[in-house]
Image (tube, rainbow, N blue to C red; front, side):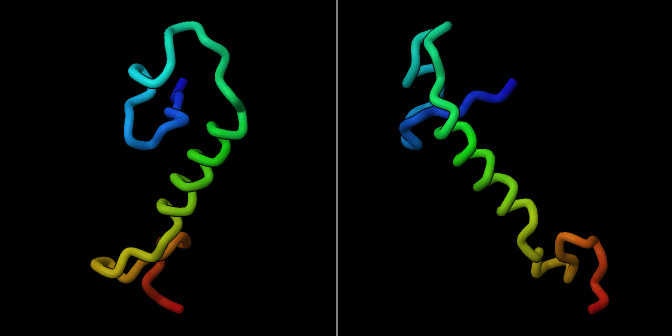
Length: 55
């Protein structure tokens, strides 16, 4: 399971103690950013989220 830090400047292991409750909103926001980054068009390949260079 991936756990994201509530403070982007610190790794989750340093920002939270082990076993501490994790705010779901922080996790959802971080995951949304990762999903958006993964869907951005990659200019070096010409392929976007669909995996095709054709439009």
